[in-house]
Image 1 (cartoon, one colour):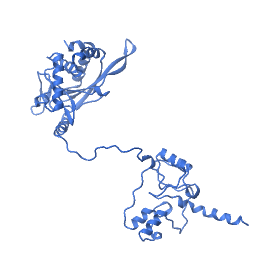
Image 2 (cartoon, rainbow, N blue to C red; image 1 turned 180 degrees about the vertical axis):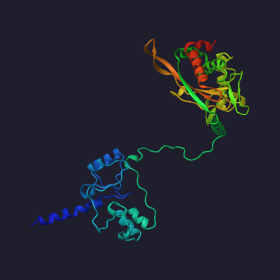
Image 3 (cartoon, one colour; image 1 turned 90 degrees about the vertical axis):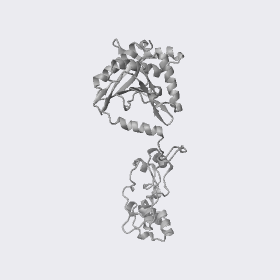
Image 4 (spheres, one colour; image 1 turned 180 degrees about the horizontal axis):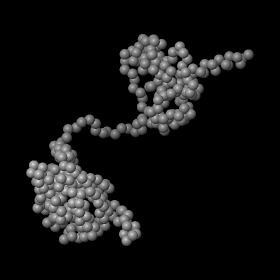
Length: 368
């Protein structure tokens, strides 16, 4: 006789899925394993429906979910015709706002009334959906700058120069240059105060002697190529709050010790803000070296008033063929950005060829 009433709860199980629909911002009822799986997959359980007891979300439900997937009811779920359903938070919000929730149109699964539905009916903004479990911060947020900040005078000048570079039609040519012998030369001179920048500037200057068109610039006003007998190599230097290009004047004519000494003085003035305009605005050719930062390849923007700029990346072990056999050498990639109005592809290629010949096979000429 006691078995007859036991069937009653089974009939009520059909609409139980309605309680499985969890409105945005409300408590999620899910098994521990389902929560772990959801966090690993980046799935938001808010609004999802479960097939477990009393609508509990279980692992099997999460297996079919994907990040950003729309909530869906268990297979076969239908809200019975004429039946109104509301979440506990919706009923609470309705009571607080003096609204009969049964008169509110539901937007939840199967037409269920959610808390947001009630808030909208009361003329209030809906609550924001909570973040997905996988998106929650796992550590304290660092202090980072936020919002606009006016450029300094230096940064404004750099920005304007960068905009001016867009006026010239440029192209880029790259080449790998082996540096084993150059590195040996630098190692022998470093104790005497010789810098890599000085050696590279002298190498570039000597190569420019053979390619005067690369040391020239195009003048739009006179529609002419402006050649320059002085080879003044500008080197990009990052300083606090900006970028500046100190110039090594007549670098092709000076010995390496003089160039190194001048470069140290120029860098010191650049960092202290004591450079005179002529010391950073007189370059006929520019060099940007990011090799010390481990950069493998990059290109530079052409400074106004020049025809070319050489971007120098870091030197690293590279496998090449020598006498038909693979061998490892140190090499760096250099990229020449040139003004295509007066410098052509062959000009750039030949310039890089001669620069590579000097650095790879005759670096001692740099210091003679």
